[in-house]
Image (cartoon, rainbow, N blue to C red; front, side, top):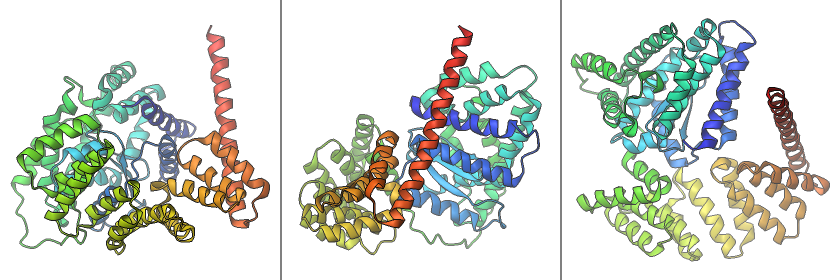
Length: 483
Protein backbone atom coordinates (compact mmCIF):
# COMPACT_ATOMS: atom_id res chain seq x y z
CA UNK A 1 0.00 0.00 0.00
CA UNK A 2 1.27 3.47 -0.79
CA UNK A 3 2.72 5.26 2.27
CA UNK A 4 0.22 8.12 2.19
CA UNK A 5 -2.63 5.62 2.15
CA UNK A 6 -1.28 3.72 5.14
CA UNK A 7 -0.81 6.99 6.99
CA UNK A 8 -4.34 8.11 6.20
CA UNK A 9 -5.88 4.87 7.37
CA UNK A 10 -3.81 4.86 10.53
CA UNK A 11 -4.91 8.43 11.20
CA UNK A 12 -8.52 7.34 10.94
CA UNK A 13 -7.89 4.36 13.22
CA UNK A 14 -6.29 6.44 15.95
CA UNK A 15 -9.01 9.05 15.58
CA UNK A 16 -11.77 6.58 16.38
CA UNK A 17 -9.72 4.92 19.11
CA UNK A 18 -9.22 8.27 20.82
CA UNK A 19 -12.87 9.10 20.31
CA UNK A 20 -13.89 6.16 22.48
CA UNK A 21 -10.96 6.12 24.85
CA UNK A 22 -12.56 9.15 26.46
CA UNK A 23 -15.77 7.31 27.31
CA UNK A 24 -15.20 3.74 28.62
CA UNK A 25 -18.85 3.03 27.72
CA UNK A 26 -20.26 0.51 25.27
CA UNK A 27 -20.64 2.12 21.89
CA UNK A 28 -24.17 3.34 21.16
CA UNK A 29 -25.80 3.78 17.76
CA UNK A 30 -25.50 7.61 17.90
CA UNK A 31 -21.84 7.26 18.90
CA UNK A 32 -21.18 4.87 16.05
CA UNK A 33 -22.87 7.22 13.59
CA UNK A 34 -20.63 10.04 14.75
CA UNK A 35 -17.62 7.74 14.58
CA UNK A 36 -18.55 6.67 11.05
CA UNK A 37 -18.84 10.29 10.01
CA UNK A 38 -15.38 11.12 11.40
CA UNK A 39 -13.92 8.01 9.79
CA UNK A 40 -15.26 8.98 6.34
CA UNK A 41 -13.94 12.51 6.77
CA UNK A 42 -10.48 11.10 7.31
CA UNK A 43 -10.79 8.72 4.38
CA UNK A 44 -11.91 11.54 2.09
CA UNK A 45 -8.93 13.63 3.15
CA UNK A 46 -6.62 10.78 2.19
CA UNK A 47 -7.83 10.86 -1.46
CA UNK A 48 -7.79 7.06 -1.36
CA UNK A 49 -11.29 6.59 -2.79
CA UNK A 50 -11.99 5.97 -6.46
CA UNK A 51 -14.55 8.39 -7.86
CA UNK A 52 -15.51 6.48 -10.99
CA UNK A 53 -19.26 7.03 -11.48
CA UNK A 54 -19.79 3.82 -13.45
CA UNK A 55 -17.99 1.50 -11.03
CA UNK A 56 -19.42 3.27 -7.98
CA UNK A 57 -22.93 2.94 -9.38
CA UNK A 58 -22.50 -0.80 -9.86
CA UNK A 59 -21.22 -1.38 -6.31
CA UNK A 60 -23.91 0.84 -4.78
CA UNK A 61 -26.67 -0.77 -6.85
CA UNK A 62 -25.62 -4.25 -5.68
CA UNK A 63 -25.58 -3.07 -2.07
CA UNK A 64 -28.95 -1.33 -2.33
CA UNK A 65 -30.55 -4.40 -3.87
CA UNK A 66 -29.35 -6.59 -1.00
CA UNK A 67 -30.47 -4.04 1.59
CA UNK A 68 -33.98 -4.07 0.14
CA UNK A 69 -34.46 -7.54 1.70
CA UNK A 70 -33.42 -6.45 5.19
CA UNK A 71 -35.67 -4.97 7.87
CA UNK A 72 -35.28 -1.23 8.60
CA UNK A 73 -31.69 -0.51 9.60
CA UNK A 74 -30.24 1.80 12.24
CA UNK A 75 -27.71 3.22 9.78
CA UNK A 76 -27.71 4.76 6.32
CA UNK A 77 -25.44 2.45 4.34
CA UNK A 78 -22.84 3.91 1.99
CA UNK A 79 -20.65 2.05 -0.49
CA UNK A 80 -17.16 3.06 -1.64
CA UNK A 81 -14.33 1.79 -3.82
CA UNK A 82 -10.77 2.08 -2.52
CA UNK A 83 -8.35 2.91 -5.33
CA UNK A 84 -5.82 0.18 -4.63
CA UNK A 85 -5.01 -3.09 -6.37
CA UNK A 86 -5.80 -5.21 -3.32
CA UNK A 87 -8.13 -8.22 -2.96
CA UNK A 88 -10.07 -6.97 0.05
CA UNK A 89 -13.24 -5.41 1.42
CA UNK A 90 -14.32 -4.25 4.86
CA UNK A 91 -17.09 -2.57 6.83
CA UNK A 92 -16.17 0.45 8.93
CA UNK A 93 -18.16 2.14 11.72
CA UNK A 94 -21.52 3.55 10.72
CA UNK A 95 -22.29 1.02 7.95
CA UNK A 96 -19.73 2.32 5.47
CA UNK A 97 -18.82 -0.54 3.13
CA UNK A 98 -15.52 -0.49 1.22
CA UNK A 99 -14.55 -2.69 -1.73
CA UNK A 100 -11.04 -2.40 -3.13
CA UNK A 101 -10.50 -1.94 -6.85
CA UNK A 102 -8.32 -5.04 -6.87
CA UNK A 103 -11.18 -7.07 -5.42
CA UNK A 104 -13.51 -6.19 -8.28
CA UNK A 105 -10.92 -6.85 -10.98
CA UNK A 106 -10.07 -10.25 -9.45
CA UNK A 107 -13.65 -11.53 -9.50
CA UNK A 108 -15.46 -13.14 -12.41
CA UNK A 109 -19.12 -12.32 -11.90
CA UNK A 110 -21.62 -9.99 -10.31
CA UNK A 111 -22.70 -12.88 -8.06
CA UNK A 112 -19.20 -13.08 -6.55
CA UNK A 113 -19.18 -9.34 -5.89
CA UNK A 114 -22.67 -9.53 -4.39
CA UNK A 115 -21.54 -12.37 -2.12
CA UNK A 116 -18.70 -10.30 -0.67
CA UNK A 117 -20.81 -7.13 -0.35
CA UNK A 118 -23.55 -9.18 1.32
CA UNK A 119 -20.99 -10.44 3.82
CA UNK A 120 -19.91 -6.86 4.63
CA UNK A 121 -23.53 -5.74 5.00
CA UNK A 122 -24.02 -8.59 7.46
CA UNK A 123 -21.05 -7.32 9.50
CA UNK A 124 -22.62 -3.86 9.68
CA UNK A 125 -26.15 -5.12 10.35
CA UNK A 126 -24.83 -7.36 13.16
CA UNK A 127 -22.87 -4.41 14.62
CA UNK A 128 -19.65 -6.38 14.71
CA UNK A 129 -17.60 -3.18 14.51
CA UNK A 130 -19.24 -1.81 17.64
CA UNK A 131 -18.71 -5.17 19.39
CA UNK A 132 -15.00 -5.02 18.60
CA UNK A 133 -14.74 -1.50 19.96
CA UNK A 134 -16.65 -2.52 23.09
CA UNK A 135 -14.33 -5.50 23.58
CA UNK A 136 -11.39 -3.11 23.42
CA UNK A 137 -12.18 -2.17 27.04
CA UNK A 138 -10.46 -5.41 28.05
CA UNK A 139 -7.21 -4.78 26.18
CA UNK A 140 -4.93 -1.80 25.93
CA UNK A 141 -5.60 0.98 23.47
CA UNK A 142 -2.17 0.35 21.96
CA UNK A 143 -3.03 -3.30 21.32
CA UNK A 144 -6.34 -2.35 19.73
CA UNK A 145 -4.51 0.16 17.55
CA UNK A 146 -2.19 -2.55 16.31
CA UNK A 147 -5.08 -4.92 15.73
CA UNK A 148 -7.10 -2.44 13.68
CA UNK A 149 -4.03 -1.26 11.80
CA UNK A 150 -3.27 -4.83 10.81
CA UNK A 151 -6.83 -5.45 9.78
CA UNK A 152 -7.01 -2.36 7.59
CA UNK A 153 -3.51 -2.36 6.12
CA UNK A 154 -2.90 -6.11 6.27
CA UNK A 155 -3.20 -6.57 2.55
CA UNK A 156 -1.07 -7.81 -0.28
CA UNK A 157 0.62 -4.50 -0.95
CA UNK A 158 2.19 -4.36 2.48
CA UNK A 159 1.64 -7.64 4.25
CA UNK A 160 5.01 -7.53 6.01
CA UNK A 161 4.34 -4.12 7.56
CA UNK A 162 0.94 -5.29 8.73
CA UNK A 163 2.41 -8.42 10.27
CA UNK A 164 4.94 -6.34 12.18
CA UNK A 165 2.20 -4.09 13.53
CA UNK A 166 0.15 -7.04 14.69
CA UNK A 167 2.97 -9.07 16.22
CA UNK A 168 4.26 -6.02 18.01
CA UNK A 169 0.91 -5.22 19.57
CA UNK A 170 -0.61 -8.57 20.51
CA UNK A 171 0.25 -9.99 23.90
CA UNK A 172 -0.36 -13.48 25.24
CA UNK A 173 -3.92 -13.93 26.45
CA UNK A 174 -5.48 -11.55 23.91
CA UNK A 175 -6.42 -14.29 21.44
CA UNK A 176 -10.00 -14.25 22.80
CA UNK A 177 -10.64 -11.20 20.69
CA UNK A 178 -9.39 -13.06 17.61
CA UNK A 179 -11.65 -16.02 18.33
CA UNK A 180 -14.54 -13.62 18.67
CA UNK A 181 -13.62 -12.18 15.30
CA UNK A 182 -13.83 -15.63 13.74
CA UNK A 183 -17.29 -16.01 15.26
CA UNK A 184 -18.21 -12.68 13.68
CA UNK A 185 -17.01 -13.98 10.32
CA UNK A 186 -19.13 -17.11 10.60
CA UNK A 187 -22.20 -15.08 11.51
CA UNK A 188 -21.57 -12.66 8.63
CA UNK A 189 -21.24 -15.56 6.17
CA UNK A 190 -24.49 -17.12 7.39
CA UNK A 191 -26.43 -13.87 7.25
CA UNK A 192 -24.87 -12.93 3.93
CA UNK A 193 -26.08 -16.20 2.41
CA UNK A 194 -29.54 -15.52 3.81
CA UNK A 195 -29.60 -12.10 2.10
CA UNK A 196 -28.35 -13.58 -1.17
CA UNK A 197 -31.02 -16.28 -1.19
CA UNK A 198 -33.69 -13.58 -1.15
CA UNK A 199 -32.01 -11.47 -3.82
CA UNK A 200 -31.54 -11.78 -7.56
CA UNK A 201 -28.00 -13.09 -6.94
CA UNK A 202 -26.94 -16.66 -6.28
CA UNK A 203 -25.48 -17.47 -2.83
CA UNK A 204 -22.84 -19.59 -4.51
CA UNK A 205 -21.19 -16.25 -5.33
CA UNK A 206 -19.94 -15.93 -1.76
CA UNK A 207 -18.34 -19.38 -1.91
CA UNK A 208 -16.67 -18.55 -5.23
CA UNK A 209 -15.34 -15.32 -3.76
CA UNK A 210 -13.91 -17.14 -0.75
CA UNK A 211 -12.26 -19.66 -3.03
CA UNK A 212 -10.56 -16.80 -4.87
CA UNK A 213 -9.32 -15.35 -1.59
CA UNK A 214 -7.83 -18.72 -0.71
CA UNK A 215 -6.33 -19.26 -4.19
CA UNK A 216 -4.73 -15.82 -4.30
CA UNK A 217 -3.39 -16.11 -0.73
CA UNK A 218 -3.43 -12.33 -0.77
CA UNK A 219 -1.38 -12.15 -3.95
CA UNK A 220 1.32 -14.58 -3.02
CA UNK A 221 2.44 -13.52 0.45
CA UNK A 222 3.03 -16.80 2.29
CA UNK A 223 2.34 -17.63 5.92
CA UNK A 224 0.40 -14.50 6.85
CA UNK A 225 -1.47 -15.31 10.08
CA UNK A 226 -5.25 -15.14 9.98
CA UNK A 227 -5.42 -12.16 12.30
CA UNK A 228 -3.55 -9.97 9.79
CA UNK A 229 -6.23 -10.55 7.19
CA UNK A 230 -9.41 -8.52 7.15
CA UNK A 231 -11.39 -11.75 7.01
CA UNK A 232 -9.71 -14.50 9.02
CA UNK A 233 -10.12 -18.26 8.81
CA UNK A 234 -10.70 -18.51 5.06
CA UNK A 235 -10.28 -22.31 4.90
CA UNK A 236 -12.69 -22.97 7.76
CA UNK A 237 -15.14 -20.44 6.34
CA UNK A 238 -15.12 -22.20 2.97
CA UNK A 239 -15.94 -25.52 4.65
CA UNK A 240 -18.76 -23.92 6.63
CA UNK A 241 -20.25 -22.18 3.60
CA UNK A 242 -20.03 -25.39 1.56
CA UNK A 243 -21.99 -27.16 4.29
CA UNK A 244 -24.72 -24.51 4.27
CA UNK A 245 -24.99 -24.49 0.48
CA UNK A 246 -25.09 -28.31 0.25
CA UNK A 247 -28.68 -28.11 1.44
CA UNK A 248 -29.59 -25.10 -0.73
CA UNK A 249 -32.37 -25.73 -3.22
CA UNK A 250 -32.53 -22.80 -5.65
CA UNK A 251 -36.06 -21.42 -6.00
CA UNK A 252 -37.78 -21.74 -9.35
CA UNK A 253 -38.23 -17.98 -9.48
CA UNK A 254 -35.99 -15.24 -8.06
CA UNK A 255 -36.35 -11.47 -8.05
CA UNK A 256 -35.04 -9.88 -11.22
CA UNK A 257 -32.09 -7.53 -11.13
CA UNK A 258 -33.49 -4.26 -12.39
CA UNK A 259 -30.02 -2.80 -12.91
CA UNK A 260 -27.94 -3.91 -15.85
CA UNK A 261 -24.79 -4.33 -13.76
CA UNK A 262 -22.53 -5.05 -16.76
CA UNK A 263 -19.92 -6.54 -14.46
CA UNK A 264 -17.49 -7.61 -17.19
CA UNK A 265 -17.45 -4.15 -18.79
CA UNK A 266 -16.89 -2.46 -15.43
CA UNK A 267 -14.15 -4.93 -14.46
CA UNK A 268 -12.13 -4.26 -17.60
CA UNK A 269 -12.86 -0.54 -17.35
CA UNK A 270 -11.15 -0.57 -13.95
CA UNK A 271 -8.19 -2.51 -15.34
CA UNK A 272 -7.88 -0.29 -18.40
CA UNK A 273 -8.28 3.07 -16.65
CA UNK A 274 -6.65 2.50 -13.26
CA UNK A 275 -4.52 -0.65 -13.32
CA UNK A 276 -0.74 -0.51 -13.36
CA UNK A 277 0.10 0.02 -17.03
CA UNK A 278 2.43 -2.81 -17.96
CA UNK A 279 0.82 -5.61 -15.90
CA UNK A 280 -2.61 -4.52 -17.15
CA UNK A 281 -1.39 -4.49 -20.75
CA UNK A 282 0.08 -7.96 -20.38
CA UNK A 283 -3.12 -9.32 -18.84
CA UNK A 284 -5.43 -7.81 -21.45
CA UNK A 285 -3.15 -8.95 -24.29
CA UNK A 286 -3.19 -12.51 -22.94
CA UNK A 287 -6.96 -12.53 -22.59
CA UNK A 288 -7.53 -11.04 -26.05
CA UNK A 289 -5.39 -13.75 -27.63
CA UNK A 290 -7.87 -16.26 -26.27
CA UNK A 291 -10.99 -14.22 -27.00
CA UNK A 292 -10.26 -11.55 -29.65
CA UNK A 293 -13.93 -10.71 -30.18
CA UNK A 294 -14.75 -9.94 -26.55
CA UNK A 295 -16.17 -6.41 -26.44
CA UNK A 296 -15.33 -5.87 -22.77
CA UNK A 297 -11.68 -6.83 -23.33
CA UNK A 298 -11.43 -4.59 -26.40
CA UNK A 299 -13.00 -1.78 -24.38
CA UNK A 300 -10.48 -2.22 -21.56
CA UNK A 301 -7.56 -2.36 -24.00
CA UNK A 302 -8.79 0.79 -25.73
CA UNK A 303 -8.81 2.64 -22.42
CA UNK A 304 -5.32 1.34 -21.64
CA UNK A 305 -3.92 2.42 -25.02
CA UNK A 306 -5.31 5.91 -24.45
CA UNK A 307 -3.39 6.08 -21.15
CA UNK A 308 -0.24 5.05 -23.03
CA UNK A 309 -0.82 7.96 -25.48
CA UNK A 310 -1.47 5.54 -28.34
CA UNK A 311 -4.62 7.28 -29.52
CA UNK A 312 -4.97 5.54 -32.88
CA UNK A 313 -4.76 2.09 -31.31
CA UNK A 314 -7.17 3.19 -28.58
CA UNK A 315 -9.74 4.31 -31.13
CA UNK A 316 -9.25 1.13 -33.18
CA UNK A 317 -9.94 -1.07 -30.14
CA UNK A 318 -13.02 0.92 -29.14
CA UNK A 319 -14.41 0.79 -32.68
CA UNK A 320 -13.91 -3.00 -32.73
CA UNK A 321 -15.73 -3.22 -29.41
CA UNK A 322 -18.54 -1.07 -30.79
CA UNK A 323 -18.86 -3.36 -33.81
CA UNK A 324 -19.58 -6.20 -31.36
CA UNK A 325 -21.82 -4.22 -28.98
CA UNK A 326 -23.53 -1.81 -31.35
CA UNK A 327 -24.54 1.55 -29.81
CA UNK A 328 -23.06 0.55 -26.45
CA UNK A 329 -23.18 3.77 -24.37
CA UNK A 330 -20.10 2.89 -22.31
CA UNK A 331 -18.03 2.51 -25.48
CA UNK A 332 -19.53 5.61 -27.11
CA UNK A 333 -18.71 7.65 -24.01
CA UNK A 334 -15.00 6.79 -24.22
CA UNK A 335 -14.92 7.32 -27.98
CA UNK A 336 -16.34 10.80 -27.44
CA UNK A 337 -13.86 11.52 -24.65
CA UNK A 338 -10.88 10.51 -26.78
CA UNK A 339 -12.14 12.52 -29.76
CA UNK A 340 -12.43 15.59 -27.51
CA UNK A 341 -8.99 15.10 -25.98
CA UNK A 342 -7.60 14.57 -29.49
CA UNK A 343 -8.87 18.00 -30.62
CA UNK A 344 -11.82 16.68 -32.63
CA UNK A 345 -14.49 18.61 -30.74
CA UNK A 346 -17.34 18.37 -33.21
CA UNK A 347 -16.85 14.64 -33.71
CA UNK A 348 -16.91 14.25 -29.93
CA UNK A 349 -20.20 16.14 -29.66
CA UNK A 350 -21.77 13.99 -32.37
CA UNK A 351 -20.82 10.76 -30.56
CA UNK A 352 -21.67 11.94 -27.05
CA UNK A 353 -25.17 13.03 -28.02
CA UNK A 354 -26.23 9.37 -28.07
CA UNK A 355 -25.14 8.95 -24.43
CA UNK A 356 -27.13 11.89 -23.01
CA UNK A 357 -30.27 9.88 -21.99
CA UNK A 358 -28.26 7.47 -19.81
CA UNK A 359 -28.82 8.28 -16.08
CA UNK A 360 -25.22 7.68 -14.94
CA UNK A 361 -23.29 7.99 -18.18
CA UNK A 362 -25.22 11.14 -19.11
CA UNK A 363 -23.40 13.16 -16.43
CA UNK A 364 -20.07 11.96 -17.75
CA UNK A 365 -21.11 12.74 -21.31
CA UNK A 366 -22.05 16.29 -20.28
CA UNK A 367 -18.58 16.86 -18.82
CA UNK A 368 -16.90 15.87 -22.10
CA UNK A 369 -19.47 17.85 -24.10
CA UNK A 370 -18.67 20.91 -21.97
CA UNK A 371 -14.96 20.40 -22.67
CA UNK A 372 -15.71 20.15 -26.40
CA UNK A 373 -17.76 23.37 -26.33
CA UNK A 374 -14.89 25.05 -24.49
CA UNK A 375 -12.57 23.97 -27.31
CA UNK A 376 -15.04 25.49 -29.78
CA UNK A 377 -15.07 28.77 -27.75
CA UNK A 378 -18.78 28.37 -26.95
CA UNK A 379 -18.41 29.63 -23.37
CA UNK A 380 -22.12 29.83 -22.54
CA UNK A 381 -22.83 26.17 -23.31
CA UNK A 382 -19.61 25.07 -21.67
CA UNK A 383 -20.42 26.98 -18.46
CA UNK A 384 -23.96 25.61 -18.29
CA UNK A 385 -22.80 22.04 -18.71
CA UNK A 386 -19.89 22.31 -16.26
CA UNK A 387 -22.25 23.70 -13.61
CA UNK A 388 -24.64 20.83 -14.28
CA UNK A 389 -21.85 18.31 -13.76
CA UNK A 390 -20.73 19.96 -10.51
CA UNK A 391 -24.26 19.86 -9.11
CA UNK A 392 -24.54 16.11 -9.77
CA UNK A 393 -21.03 14.68 -9.39
CA UNK A 394 -18.47 17.25 -8.22
CA UNK A 395 -16.03 14.75 -6.57
CA UNK A 396 -15.66 12.85 -9.85
CA UNK A 397 -14.98 15.97 -11.91
CA UNK A 398 -12.86 18.54 -10.04
CA UNK A 399 -11.54 19.67 -13.43
CA UNK A 400 -14.96 21.23 -14.03
CA UNK A 401 -14.03 23.85 -11.40
CA UNK A 402 -10.72 24.49 -13.16
CA UNK A 403 -12.44 24.96 -16.52
CA UNK A 404 -14.99 27.32 -14.99
CA UNK A 405 -12.08 29.32 -13.55
CA UNK A 406 -10.63 29.62 -17.06
CA UNK A 407 -13.98 30.73 -18.44
CA UNK A 408 -14.28 33.41 -15.76
CA UNK A 409 -10.74 34.56 -16.43
CA UNK A 410 -11.53 34.94 -20.14
CA UNK A 411 -14.61 36.96 -19.15
CA UNK A 412 -12.43 39.20 -16.94
CA UNK A 413 -14.09 38.07 -13.70
CA UNK A 414 -11.07 37.45 -11.43
CA UNK A 415 -13.19 37.07 -8.27
CA UNK A 416 -15.06 34.10 -9.73
CA UNK A 417 -11.89 32.73 -11.29
CA UNK A 418 -10.20 32.66 -7.87
CA UNK A 419 -13.35 31.16 -6.34
CA UNK A 420 -13.42 28.22 -8.75
CA UNK A 421 -9.66 27.72 -8.51
CA UNK A 422 -10.03 27.55 -4.73
CA UNK A 423 -12.64 24.80 -5.10
CA UNK A 424 -10.51 22.96 -7.65
CA UNK A 425 -7.40 22.92 -5.46
CA UNK A 426 -9.47 21.94 -2.42
CA UNK A 427 -11.01 18.98 -4.25
CA UNK A 428 -7.61 17.85 -5.54
CA UNK A 429 -5.93 18.08 -2.13
CA UNK A 430 -3.72 21.17 -2.63
CA UNK A 431 -5.00 22.87 0.51
CA UNK A 432 -2.46 25.73 0.76
CA UNK A 433 -3.14 26.84 -2.80
CA UNK A 434 -6.88 26.48 -2.23
CA UNK A 435 -6.66 28.81 0.78
CA UNK A 436 -4.72 31.38 -1.25
CA UNK A 437 -7.32 31.51 -4.02
CA UNK A 438 -10.28 31.52 -1.64
CA UNK A 439 -8.75 34.46 0.25
CA UNK A 440 -8.30 36.40 -2.99
CA UNK A 441 -11.86 35.57 -4.06
CA UNK A 442 -13.30 36.93 -0.80
CA UNK A 443 -11.67 40.33 -1.41
CA UNK A 444 -14.04 41.20 -4.27
CA UNK A 445 -16.57 38.35 -4.63
CA UNK A 446 -20.03 39.86 -5.13
CA UNK A 447 -22.17 36.71 -5.35
CA UNK A 448 -23.60 36.28 -1.82
CA UNK A 449 -24.08 32.52 -2.02
CA UNK A 450 -20.57 31.93 -3.37
CA UNK A 451 -19.10 34.40 -0.89
CA UNK A 452 -20.65 32.52 2.04
CA UNK A 453 -19.50 29.16 0.70
CA UNK A 454 -15.94 30.41 0.15
CA UNK A 455 -15.82 31.96 3.62
CA UNK A 456 -17.14 28.81 5.28
CA UNK A 457 -14.66 26.59 3.45
CA UNK A 458 -11.73 28.92 4.14
CA UNK A 459 -12.61 29.07 7.85
CA UNK A 460 -12.71 25.27 7.97
CA UNK A 461 -9.35 24.94 6.20
CA UNK A 462 -7.70 27.55 8.42
CA UNK A 463 -8.92 25.72 11.52
CA UNK A 464 -7.60 22.39 10.24
CA UNK A 465 -4.29 24.04 9.34
CA UNK A 466 -3.96 25.48 12.86
CA UNK A 467 -4.74 22.08 14.40
CA UNK A 468 -2.14 20.38 12.22
CA UNK A 469 0.48 22.99 13.16
CA UNK A 470 -0.32 22.55 16.86
CA UNK A 471 -0.06 18.76 16.54
CA UNK A 472 3.25 19.04 14.73
CA UNK A 473 4.62 21.36 17.41
CA UNK A 474 3.47 18.92 20.11
CA UNK A 475 5.26 16.05 18.38
CA UNK A 476 8.44 18.10 18.05
CA UNK A 477 8.34 19.01 21.76
CA UNK A 478 7.89 15.36 22.72
CA UNK A 479 10.71 14.38 20.42
CA UNK A 480 13.06 16.91 22.02
CA UNK A 481 12.11 15.65 25.52
CA UNK A 482 13.06 12.09 24.56
CA UNK A 483 16.44 13.29 23.35
